[in-house]
Length: 167
Image (cartoon, rainbow, N blue to C red; front, side, top):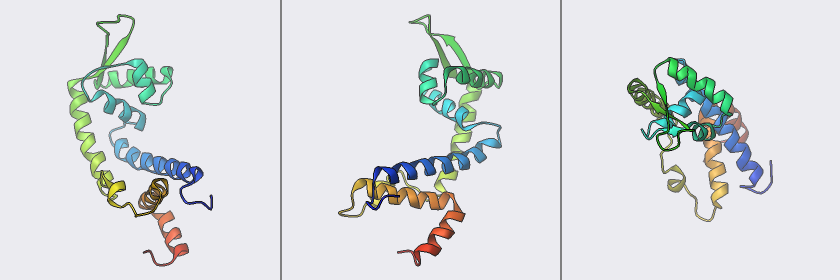
């Protein structure tokens, strides 16, 4: 860790840890419905109802094309997604949510949002808790560390013990 608050190494470490812990937490919520984080990303992208080319879905879901194809095949088998040839560019395939997929996305979205709300995160959390004079990156790192503490209670206990009384 750097001696300079908000150094890129701190930000990367904090973002990576927060993403992994949040994925683990949401993965547990989604696992009840036998849905992976990757599948959730696909459903979220398709929830806008616009239909998206498979290449775009691959990019947005951070999945290689072959892996995405297998995942979408599974979602098609579960009647959550369907594919159609793009009416403008017939070489492209677009993916859409089925009616059941829209209902499942809405239901799961409520559960995911409730899980995130339990962490005490507000959508404007960064702006609301900014400290005057603190560089934005340092403030974000502090907030992400707080988030990691909420996501990883064992780390929070260790961190609190090491830091003494908090604020």
